[in-house]
Image (tube, rainbow, N blue to C red; front, side):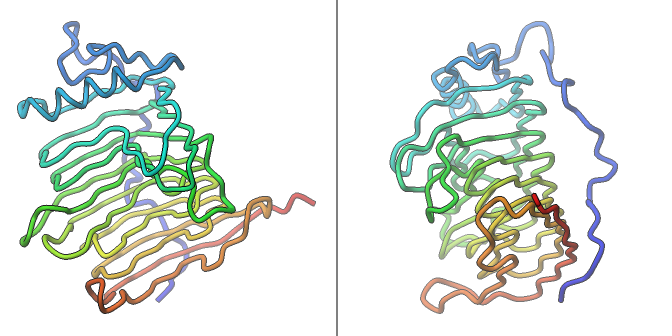
Length: 277
């Protein structure tokens, strides 16, 4: 069912732009400045890779801080993953005002933040932009946050909170994906997708979801299949300048050879737009 007048589920969440700085004077290991990433528009991939390596290696790091600014990740090649974490849990990434900027050069989906078999993950205030994104090609561009199960054969991976996430000219702000094995569940989100291919995307993974998305010039504003128990609010707008939607809210059944059926999906949506003429 589609219901009117969606409302953000995180209305009480305060704006945090400009708030994130040095957590303490010593810049803990999870702070980007400790690794030389300053958000000043200069190349930042090497510094952020060092930061991510520390998070992967040191389980006591529970918070990553990215100060406000622009972080240049450079060109991304065929299916490239920029910053990957595996089997990490209980992690908070505080990134209000941080913009990760990349340039996808190949006809493929690249992944800026890649999380494999991770759980109890919070990401706050992260923004991304892909200067190589091509809206007419399915697909050429980056996904800002990609969460996937790979090695867990059974059970669950639970606890994801994506709030204040904004993607501009990207394939998607986030995608949950995977096939057999552990189910990814217990997800909340409050995001903005601007000139993207997808809004919130759940591809055979992502059960027990509630969230809100503002989608502007997005081809597929909400895309779930092979998942269950969603309660989602959407505000969908367009100015008719981007490539039109081929299915604005496609809720589909998963192919039998790829996993599960789709069930118990509740959508509250409102629509608007501004014409250029």
